Image (cartoon, rainbow over all chains, first blue to last red; front, side):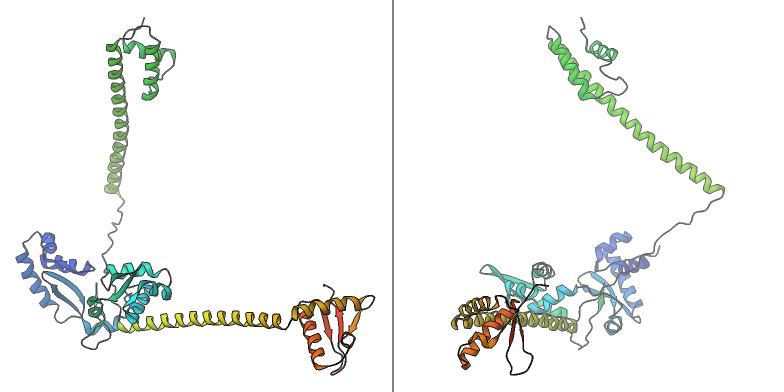
Amino acid sequence: MNDLRIIEAALFTSASSVSESQLGKLISKPVRQVRDIMDKLILEYEDRAIEIINIEDGKYVMQVKREYGKYLKNLAPREMDTQVLRTLSVIAYHQPVIQSKVVEIRGNKAYEHIKELEAEKLISSKPQGHSKLLTTTEKFVEYFWNEEDDKYSNTEG
Amino acid sequence: MLEEPVEILLDLATRGDIDPWDIDIIEVTDKFLKKLDEMSQLDLRLSGRTLFYASMLLRMKAEGLEVEDTDDELEEVLDDIELEEEDDVKIEYPKLTPRIRRKSKRPVTLDELIKELSKAESVERRKNIKKYTDADSRIKVEKLLKIAHDERIEEKILEVEAMLDEKFKGRDYVLFSELIDCMTPSSIVYTYIPLLFLASKKAIWLEQEELYEDLYIRRRVDE
């Protein structure tokens, strides 16, 4: 089986980024050879709606190119639950805001949402009295900020 | 005199105390120990060997269970062989290999975040309106009760009620004018308001056949 095609299939299947070493294990080849294959594969996809990019040192992801994202809004489900997103919007608007205030607005379910958002590193908290003071993070800004004024971010995963 | 553990076991089996084909180790050991207790002379070597035999029995039983499992495996293997043979002869079963499909999820957009914020705000607004409305209505009731208290309405109601009881004796109705000695505006109001309270409590009916004419007060009979 062609190593390049195995890697292509692996990137297609994976919902998130895949590391060079993972790909190397898949085809039983050293990382150096994986890099060569990746260069070829990235070139192959240049004229497609899909792109393969090196997101951070040695990690690759296959995703829809930014310009096509806006057509797919109704096809791919959102990665964040509506209720969690609503809690995040309340935190973003009222920040810095104490947890009890968020719970007052959103109800008891907000405790679970806050935990989830903290795990995703979209919000951070520091203790304040018996409650927590919540603010959005840099990751939150990166997530929603769009430098090209394109309202729809890339479709990944 | 039984001396050897095997002899004891054989004795138990021949008496029907244990089933040699289906030995319950715990039961056998208990019976074995009981038997030893019954023996007049306690020999350490004997009890040591008893333990040894008990462990042997346990091992034999475990091996028996293992054989049963192996039998099951053997049956499965035979089944497979039979199936393969059938395959060769005539039947070709389609092999189902599900394709791997990508399950996409897209990131949330800023628009969606703002939409959710406006929804959260409208929910909050509705909650607040309800809170204030509830508080307002509570204040209104409290105010009303306070007024009723200030104006001694409760006492007046009791007075009018007692007066009506007196007047209703042997009659179907009482006229409003009968309740007032002197037709002054204040006496009309202080008699009329308690009547309204009694009517709202469903104690009486108030009826006026003609405008500006006298008011008929009737006892309300429960339907």
